[in-house]
Length: 148
Image (cartoon, rainbow, N blue to C red; front, side, top):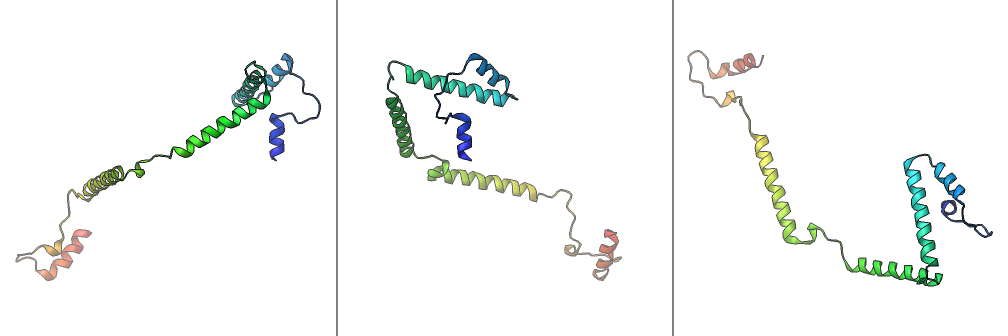
């Protein structure tokens, strides 16, 4: 599986690789079906040109030095990443406390807003009825009548 992916980008044949002609390059470009394939192909061409220029240039005439320079630069980048730890708000206790405090305050405000009731219906059991027309025993009948 990986070998087939590598074969797409590299020539593993024992024959000496020949430089592609302008017609070959145009045929490869015209074979692209969409923008992404064309973008990928052009980036591949650009990378190959940059690598070949780096290998042929006077200051990097030795291919082994170019490879060693690449490995050393990767090593330096990895060492730099190992020294610089990722930062987050959670790394600083004061910022974490402040963030959680803000969240709690906002939740309290939202809960208080949700608990506000407009046009509240009174609980009839809590009403003390002082009437000659209705007694406490008739309260169930009154509730039933109001709910229907």
